[in-house]
Image (cartoon, rainbow, N blue to C red; front, side, top):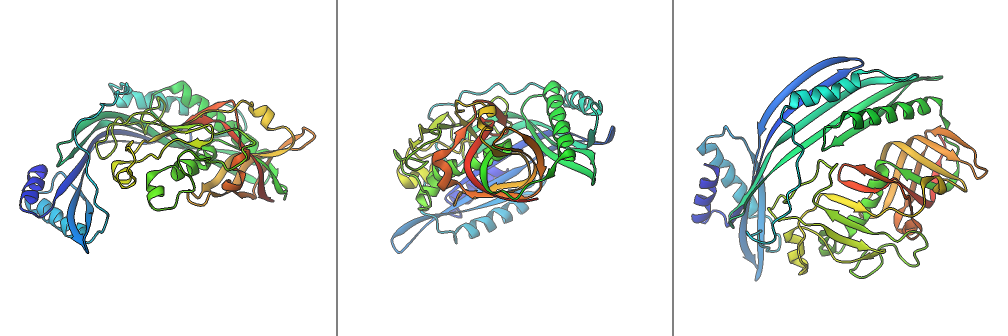
Length: 432
């Protein structure tokens, strides 16, 4: 019914084009408090999202406005038509330069093997049983949430695109706690995974318990003024998002990008590790993996930065059309080539190693980064080390990019595969 209405409105001149996104999701959820199950929940949800487009000219320039509306499968014809007409009226006020929609054809993506989970309930129980096994001393699980989702997403548009793909996603969070001399302390860890692997969850829980034990023994971070900084974990992914943003066609079209194809993304000279970075539709461990983007563009791996130099812009059809650049689609995953130095070598000579932040952010536009340190290790120049907590770190990535040192060890996170650690030559460090 929805697509019949969209076509009727198009033929009547109420809109020029449309696109729909229809995920159907089956999920199972498990909530734990300490060593017991607090709640279980099951859901089946169908979502509908329609984007309508209006074409018009102003002062001799062609524009394509758009508006997106979320719909519900239970809405009747009259409700749907009112919502679509309202969206079409709103789209007529949006002045985006004209651009085409994705058309059928092109090289079909190589479909990844999606995790086969015949019974979500049993799969969730196998993961939950790992968390209910309270092991170790000095730290314990405070609470946890686990979510498993599987389903199908379908993308259609008025140009004739009609693609669908299956997906499986796991997510959740762990909260662990330990007793410190000053009182109880907690660490929070989000989870994201594309495979049901109880042994991997056990390893992550053990890692978090060990970090929490170290947090309980940590002393306040010294006021170092400036210090070499070794980032690990999710902060690495956040820091390197600066490069994918400035390599995007969207940033280039908005004249916000600091990069140019063929030019250095790290400045001159590059005294550290030259960056090699690519975009991927599929990483085995990443629940963000998809074969098509939300416009229905077939996704393929894209080499983006090689040896510290930008190869080309990347982005969905709209932004690449504006630049006259071949579109890549909106790829979800980043893969960064590791460096040649092990973490142990990166720790030498004195540095603050940051393991856990209360929050770490890197402004994609400016490259300014900052974070409040929850747990770190101060490696003094003589080779001693101690766990520290509190205080903050900050700096400007564009000034430090040429000296980045990437670890040889890999880490795999949601939408990211790359070095487990990145050493920055200097960052501001306030005391705890």
